[in-house]
Structure formats: C-alpha cells, structure tokens
Amino acid sequence: MPRRPPALASVTLTALRHARGWTGQDLAEASGLSAQMISLYESERAPSRRKLESFASVMGYGVEAVDFLLFGLAQATAEAAPPRSPDDPTAEEARRIQQAAVRLGQAAQTAAAEHLTSLLRARRTAQARRGAEHAWARLASRPAAERRRMVETSPEFQGWALVERLCHESEKAASDSAALALELAELALLVAALTPGTGPWRSRLLGYAFAFLANARRVGNDLDGAEEALASAWRLWQAGAAAPG
Image (cartoon, rainbow, N blue to C red):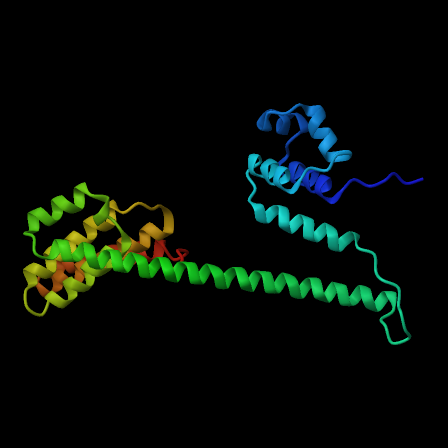
C-alpha cells in the first residue's frame, strides 16, 4: 500500500536542498536547527510558507524559487477532473491541453521577466542621467585641476552616465576649443577608470571614452595620438561585446 505522500512544501524543501547538494545536517547547521527537525519538516510536518522561505534564503535561493517549485509540483500532482459531458475533453485531450498551457505559461513568464527587467533598466538609466546632469552642473564652472580633484575624491563623480555626459560635452566643445575638448575627454576617461564595474561592461565604458579622446586629439591635430586612442577604443569596445546596454 502506497505511503501518504509528504506535503508539497516538504517536497519543495527537499528538492531545494538536493539541488544545492546539501545534506540534512548541512541545512540544520546553517539554520540553527537539529537534523531531526529538518527530517521532520521534509517528511511529516510541512513547514509554513514563511519557514520554507527562510530555509530557501539560508541555502541562497530567492522567494521565486519557492514559487516555481510549488507551482510546478501542484501542476504535476493535480488530478484531472473527469468529463462531465460528452463535449468535455477526454483524459488524453486534457493532458495535451495542460501541456500546452504549461508551455504557454513558461513563455509568458520569460516574456514578463524580460519586460520588467527592461523597465527597471530604463528607470535606472534615467536616474543615472539625471544624476550626471547635476554632477556636470557642479563641475562645469570649476577649473580643470579642481574638476579632476573632485572626480578623484568623490563617488558622486564616478559613474557611467557622467562619462557619457562628459564625452558629449567634449564633442560639443571641439568646434570652438580643441584644448577644452581634450580636457573633457581626458576627464571622461578618468571617470570611466574610477567607475565601479568589471568585465565586458567596464571594457565598453572605457572603449566609449577612448573614442571621444580620439576625436579630441584629432581636432587638436594630434593625429598619431588620435589613431592610438581609436585603436584602444576599438579593442576595448570589442572586448565588451557581451555587455548589456
């Protein structure tokens, strides 16, 4: 005779633990409980939702991992309702409908996550550019040496959006003053070097700044320097090909 299956919350806890390669003793030590209590939660005494989320957090999971598993287990273990009329789907048709619905749900979840991620990025981008506007307003009236000091000493002036703003200011200045264009491009490169970040994204930021440095040197008739900066820009930009944004 089959045993009474554990509650879905218990199965979820066991699955999360196994997926991390943790033993019951590992989870017990990390959560401050006994191994016997963990075994009880996974077999006879289903953890509450709050307790389940607490265990998941200890193992490095987010709340969404709990949601995904609970939903999937509920769908996998649900029993199909018997047909109530000749027009209702057969058991096989109901299985296919459920299969299609699950696939559509997965696609919708992926699309929703991508859309929400895009909205969050857009909001943060707008916030960063507004911050760069204020930072540039503080820098614009200062002499070159003081601008560099402010950038070097304050995190307020160490962000990608300020790099972008300084590069555009350098480009605007090029038609009137090659010296100012160069100073702003060099300042943008300094900001890029000080901006926190690693990997491809950082390469893209540095490559972007080097491109405007190349333009400023070209305007100042430093053609060899411009060619050198442009080569650096291209190399760094290509190295950051995988960076988002």
